[in-house]
Length: 207
Image 1 (cartoon, rainbow, N blue to C red):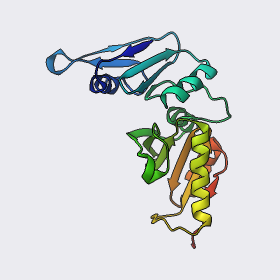
Image 2 (cartoon, one colour):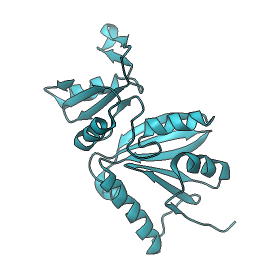
Image 3 (cartoon, rainbow, N blue to C red):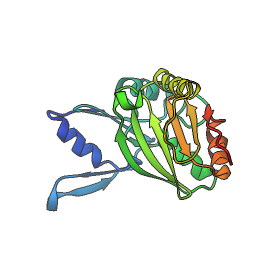
Image 4 (cartoon, rainbow, N blue to C red):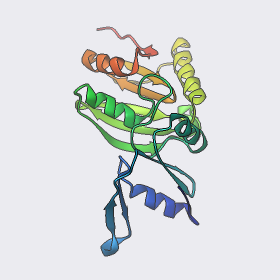
């Protein structure tokens, strides 16, 4: 389903009314505001680009990938079917962490500007709380873009560029998803490694 709005601001407003899992839709302003719960026949996946909102209800991983390439990461909905092993978006990561007994919640979502973070337009960042600890994710518009950013992180470290982290940073990647944890908690590192595989970059600091 494609919803083509006249104004981007109206699309933004309606997108904010969709719950994180995509099953509840809130619309209207003030006293006229109301919410409906929808019992989809399959997992819903909500995407937005400019003044267009796209809803796909289903589990076809190839179609989901095509929509992510065209529109960027979904802003709400069920877990993404991944072509690769492991979670390939933030919602799937949250589900995988909870399956392992972790308390994991999404606390903030924001677009990422291209130049400061060396990413591409359409990249979306998320702040998570995992067992009371902050974890940061970035969903890139493509696997290629995520790979390029991973190379940038590794090359920057090899070049001796110093970023003022409060603790050792650890970066993980699955497909177009990159996860960053800054800290020394070995239990957190083991948890993320169990879900995402080994970090592609970990900075080693003196004890």
